[in-house]
Figure (tube, rainbow, N blue to C red):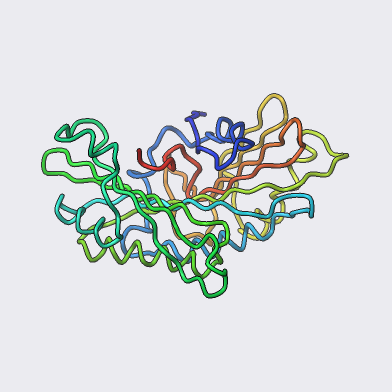
Length: 279
């Protein structure tokens, strides 16, 4: 079993999860092993479905019910000019770090950043802008791009799907092809009488049952504070394949040693460290 540094958390309490959640199948990179979900399939349906899975996670009144979503597109097939037009269509501008780099095209390429304003009719204009960063890297004649979208916690499921549709339309119109991945994280209050694995195991019981998922790989840390499970669900379009096995759903939960709150992450097709915004 291999481990990688996993997803950068949206809050300090998620850091232990980030470290322990990197239980991946082999050492495959998502961008090269994802299947389906490439140009012909939208992330919208998978996002809607995982939204419903997250609804299965119990939340007590004392815990925050906010969900933090990050959506990623790995894009190929666009020439440099097409990638720049895609960034322009999204209203992105070159980051200060990229401008300071100037003509130096080595390293991680150029990053374009901006926000997408969402419909504010039902939210009173609060927290309705999605943050977007786009890394454009050109090596010889090959241009690769990564688009990361950080969505406001106030977003409802249909607006979440609309953001995915917008990203994909822009990529299609620029002549690109994409593979998508995403994650959602949150916090649930635990039973104060439950300790260690007794507190962790019940959290994903309904999620696993609803997804009809088959276990592919499982990890528990020695302290009994973190569980990470990698699965395959036929209800999710996207998947990756490694060592002859499909996987498309990773669940991780960690109990904070001080607050006893349960920090959780759901990733499609797996949780990885590739969700950090392009910098």
